[in-house]
Length: 436
Image 1 (cartoon, rainbow, N blue to C red):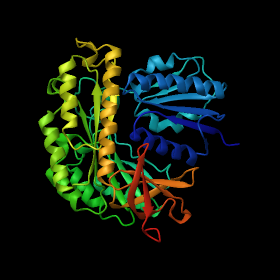
Image 2: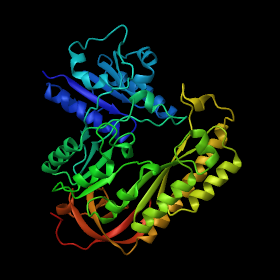
Image 3: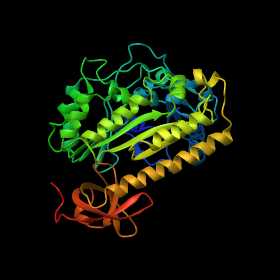
Image 4: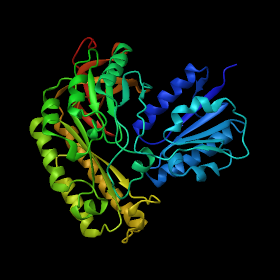
């Protein structure tokens, strides 16, 4: 009888793509994959360590796995496992700890899945010559997340990722193009390009991210490519000109800001100031007026005073942003920021987070409102219990229309007509048949 294995993934889309790849390896080796939350012979927790919340969620997932499968073999792998292997190994019920490189050899560690008195640890030191492990996820019927880059060379004072994943690296463009062709042949309509710092693509091969985009643009069958988070200082004019003229690369950029205060950006050791961020946003809008632009923002960083936060609020409100992802700062052990003076009280962190969330909701509503009346292509992803189906436009507006079975998991033209409710825009179909 085949052994059952369940995966639970925390953190970024890169983690999800890697989980999918490792899951396929196990299925090819004779394991049966089952949903997390059901009884399994083996449970694999793919960890994240970006925030303190991610650490807590790892422990909660471990406890849940033990409760559901008390006699099951329990594996913890990934970033938190890389950074804190001894800590995870000390948790009751954990049998195997694998770091960010070792996790790709999971199959070879599962020859003996008997419960252990003490967890076995395989968490190699991060070195200069880390390998690149290709990965993609296709859990959704319409969209795939394709890993094109790994690691990061940026020394941001709050971040553990370089210690967990190593230096920036990537495969050759030709291998990524082949993966995109394979995904197209399997019927995927949208590919999201993922990585730790994808704008840094080319460190390993002497190529550029724009060259990658141009090559992918020629792959037949893919309706849409979406660029995941990309640093503002790595968004080149060449890339913007290409995206503005492409019918396949979505008019959507997600750009980490992290703070709208130059004082805080300097403490964070970011590689830009607000002037660079603002210039990139305005350049995008001048070339692609209907482009959706999102930003990550951290509140409560050490040394952030009332004036810094006010500066950030005003700066963010002055820009034509479409939405925000707001994160409350949490100390990461071993990072320079954790030892910085000027710690912000948790109550104030929460207040600032709430305030910025309200700003983000307003920006999103204003962007959605500006798009009412426009005609867009939507890839429909889900049928809802209320008799509608939902999907996203190319410029990242979530819409809903009355359910039409021929369009589910396919694309069609809609007109955005409103109303806007709970972050979703009501639309009407204006095409009789799905796009091929």
